Length: 245
Ligand code: ADP
Ligand code: MG
Image (cartoon, rainbow, N blue to C red; front, top):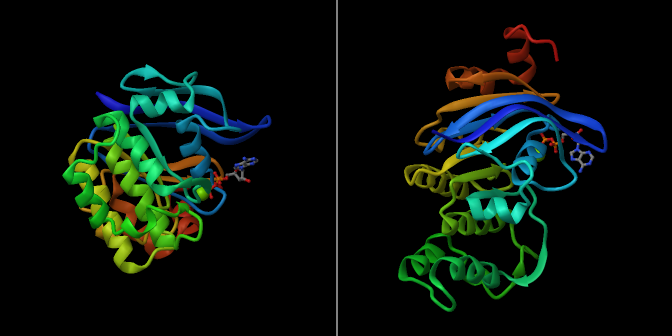
């Protein structure tokens, strides 16, 4: 069964429709790319799946494991296994390690840091950040590494990843791609937004590609047109697909 099912989803902010008629499913362990130019509605779609304000579902449904979650609060969706790595995460005045502790507490009880978590902290190269306030003064790569670590620790059913490849150096992009492939191996369903496509060549597999322009999907299917998209850009692909944008 699909982990995530989007059915005829229309999204509005203050009565202005910004995303329209989104329908696709993601199965466990699949990696789906969501691509599109700036302002297409990619981040809005991800935040809506997470249940964040001010995004309102005006039509359609969002099913997680077959259950409609439209009326669930964001923290309820987290409990059900939905996670989001923001494009630009909000800065919070807590020590970074507090977030890690909270995630671990849910799984292992208070004050337990299993060895594999210590190894992950080393692997993601974030130990120097744990005593600092969350995301304050972090470099682009540090933000993305820390976000992906917290997502990995949550063992989510669904990971919504908003441009994890933007603002990071080449080595970090490879590491981010490896992390995504690992998550998929452990059956997490992945919806990965990339604007530039920088990360694409480092991913082990891509199962589906969704191209969004002006709030609508102009393509949703197997990723065979991806090389052409990366070479020619969104407008050329839209013309080729015979879509007016
Ligand atoms: P993308 O992530 O594809 O670059 P966004 O989802 O950020 O695009 O934005 C899509 C459209 O929705 C834009 O026109 C943007 O201005 C609008 N939008 C997004 N979030 C808000 C918001 N909180 N309030 C008003 N308009 C918004
Ligand atoms: Mg965005």
